[in-house]
Length: 136
Image 1: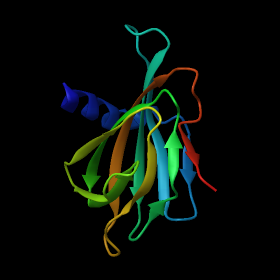
Image 2: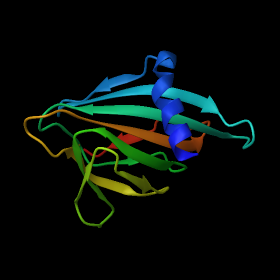
Image 3: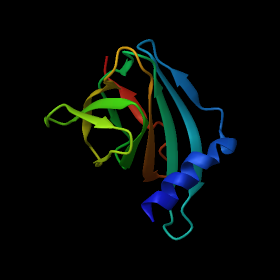
């Protein structure tokens, strides 16, 4: 079931909503899927493709308060820290979850020479339009 969801989200790149963001630290974020869940009123599934160049990273951040997130590494290796947990390196095929209210302190490419990509699938309140809030 999870593989089906991930494949559907990855293949849904043709549905790109135009929501792209490049932050100054080397991350490119593209919305690749956005669909209301017909059996869960008020909830949507959204998927974003995060691409890091060598050494790229994202600033510390939180996600929409309603967001449950399942992330999987599509290419390369990603360093991640959620809340006060350990900084963990996930490699191609590895996955992790983030729960509503979690703080993502570290998110970036573990390599300084190779690119890395991850797919983050959100289950979120349909009215939540800002999926990520970066710390200043």
